[in-house]
Length: 446
Image (cartoon, rainbow, N blue to C red; front, side):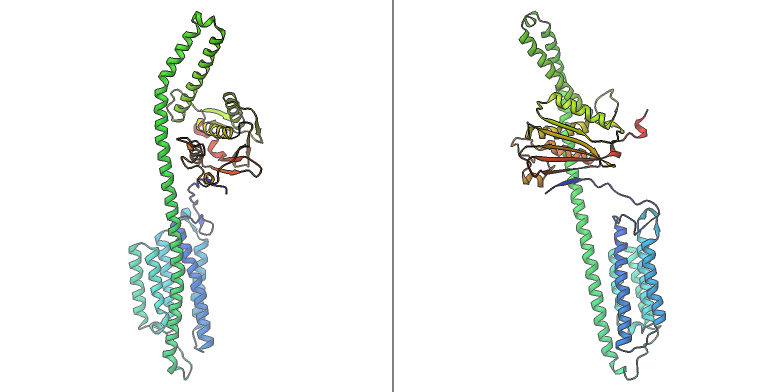
C-alpha cells in the first residue's frame, strides 16, 4: 500500500473552452453532461418507439417531420458538447434553454402523433423532474408553466393518429401498452439520473470532508507554529546569556590553564551557537526574522548546501547523495523546505544509523526528492495513516509531528508525498515538488 497525500489545485477552464474539452469539475458542467447523456437515451428511445409503432402496429406516422425533430435533438447535443463557452462553465440559463428545447421537441413529436391522447404525454413529468433537480427555483416554475401550457395546447391542437382499418377497437389496448412503455422509460431514466446525482453528492461530501480535514490540520499547524515561535522568542534571551557567560569563561585564567576544560567550553559554545541557529530558523520560517531577504540560489546549490549542513551537524556514518539533475535553474532558497527535507533525513537516520540515501532528480515539470534507508520500514498501520499527526512507532509523546509537517508543507507547495517499504529492506519516501512553485518570479527579482 502506497499512500499519496496530494493537493489538487483548483482548475479553471480557460475562456472559449468547449464542454467536451473542459475539466468537468464544476456543478454546471456535470449537470449539462447529465442532461446530454439523458438526451441521447431519449433519442434512442424515440427512434425505437417510432419504429415499433410503425412496424408492429402498422400505424402510419408522419415519419419525415418526426425525423427532423429527432435530428434536431442530435444537433442540439453535438452543439452543447462542442460550443465554446465563456470560462468553460455552464450557467443556469444554458441548462434551462436545453430543457426548454427538449420540451419543445417532445411537444412537436406529440403533436404529430395524437397530441394529449398519446400516452407518452406523461414524459412531461420527466422534464419537470429534471428541472427541479438541475435548475434554480424560478427556472423550475417557469418550465412547469411551459409544460402545462404545452399539455393544454395538445388537447385541442394535434394531428390525429392514422390507424389502420379495423384497429379502432384496439385503440384502448394500444393506449395501455403505450402507457406501460412510457412508465418504464420514465422510471428507468429517473433511476439513472437520480443514481448519478447521488453519486455526485457523495463525491461532493467526500471533497467537503477532505477540505474540513485539511482545515483542521492547517489549524493544528498554525497552533504549533505559534507555540514554536513563542518558544523561540523565549529561548533567545537565555541562549544569548549562555553565549556571553561561555565567552567570559573562555578568558578565565583557571579555565585557560586546563586544555580539557577549555575544549569542553568550546564544545558548549558550538552547541549554543547551533541552538541559536535553530531558533533563528524557526523565526525565519514563521516570517518573523527582521532584516532578512529571500536568498537566491540554484537547485543544485540549494541541495548541496543542505546536504553539507545536515552531514556536519548529525552523526552520519554512511550517506549516499546523488544529484541527477540535468538542468540547474535558479530558485528562491526556502527555509521551510530545507527544514522538512532535513526532517525526513533525520527520520531515515534514526531508523537506519548505518546508511541513508538521498537522490535529487527531475522529470521535467517536478522535482523528485527520494530518501531511502535500510531500517525496519514503516508499520502497515502507519502507511495507512501516513502524514497524520501523532502517527509514530517511536512510542514517545508528540511522535509523528515531523512527517505531519512534511506532508503539509509539501502540499502548500502544490506537491505530494508518497511512502512505501522496499522489497529487500528499509523504506522510501518521495517528495514531489512542482518546479513552478520553486522558480524565481519577476516579483522576487530586484
